[in-house]
Image 1 (cartoon, rainbow, N blue to C red):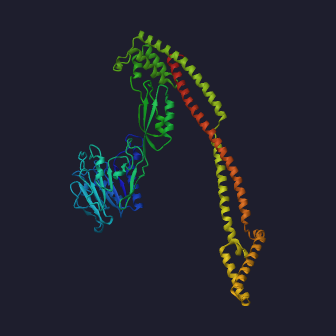
Image 2 (cartoon, rainbow, N blue to C red; image 1 turned 90 degrees about the horizontal axis):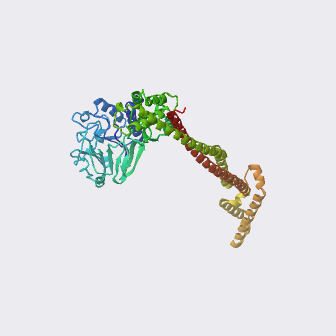
Image 3 (cartoon, helix red, strand yellow; image 1 turned 45 degrees about the horizontal axis):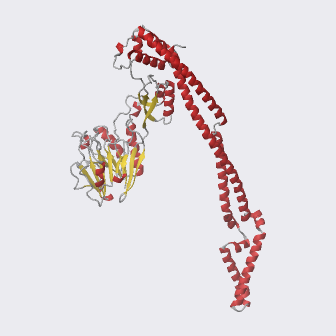
Length: 603
């Protein structure tokens, strides 16, 4: 018995609301469902299990009919459907009265409301009671238990009392839930239920506990950033027991969260470049970006370039928390604080934003301390205090400039040394590709010669002529016996009396015939090679052996060269990585240096 198990399609849900690509996702979930039906149709499944939240809400008749139209394609497949908390069986749900045109069975304990012919109808078991429905499919000797959800919130453990009643049959349980608000249960309690397969819905990610035959297929397509990893369906085969159950990924969409550390050396350009490199690894992903700031990072970042190129659903930490520094500038427009903030902000330096935030934060801390509760409207500085605070900060920045210069010079020296080393160890990618191609050619040639060498004796056997047959094969020996005996009886035995004499004559003639064949064989090797192309095995084997030996020498040389290139490439990659990291540090220091220069006014 072959089956597929799906859940949590949430048909009708709007995905990625507010995103530029929201409209393009309108049909994503239904398309995934249609694709699953295509797969089920091609695989000629016996059963399709749907364990809840097929719809994102209580469905309308039109929505049910649209799904039913697709399920009708599965003419020989039983569809077993239990509802979840999203598409639950409320009193007014059209699912109660809708007559399926497909082979769909809604496990609600009511009369079958579908178009399945009487000959294929299952039997409802006598132990189908309460909310646990149970159907028996005689062809498969199979009991299927199903539990629907009848409300949006259900804090009752629906699995508590259900168990496999007839262990002489195969038993499957289909249900929905697993958290405190939707049929909570303890996983370990399921170990005593005696089910061959427990198919659940509610979790949007694939989960399983194989020792309990317990499986969540997860949502067919991820529905939000929390639905990470692969998504798809479960495919199973059941004989006397579960033979195989495997998860089959089919989703076309993926969500991923990127976390980026940002300190006071991080520039907007560097952040954009880093995010671009991360997103380029999977261009089809939908990303949530979290910028984790250090306490000293006050720069407002702008990653609009990344948003234009990739699907960025949300960004956390793009703007710096804390005081509104532009408002601080406006409130202090008539003193040195406001004037310096304006000077820095209006400068054309690419480090202006970082310098603006750093200066505003430093001055705020110098003037008002760490009082975060102080309202921005009250942050108007006294002129004398501003002058003193500014003087301290400028002096501090000048000292910082000196330290940064020294550090930058040290890094520049290291960078120069690394560049010189890299000249000695250039990129070996080209050489490695060439030598590997040569190795493949040699290996191919060696395999070809080895194969030909194995065929030499076979070719020779097929082309042997004349008396050679008398000395090389068992068949030839048998023919030699027959020929010898024939000649003896035809010519000799009529004149020879006694069995001893006759035997001696046979042996003698047989030896003569073989000797003649051997002589002819040895004398005609080269001639037959010339006339018929019949190889001389011994010579061919020696020739092939010498060719293989020469190729082995070439291969050893190439492998040695490959090892040499690999070692050089390893050094190259290590040096390149060090150089890249050093360059990043230099860029960060340069940005910090320019920021300090801008704050100090030493332009």
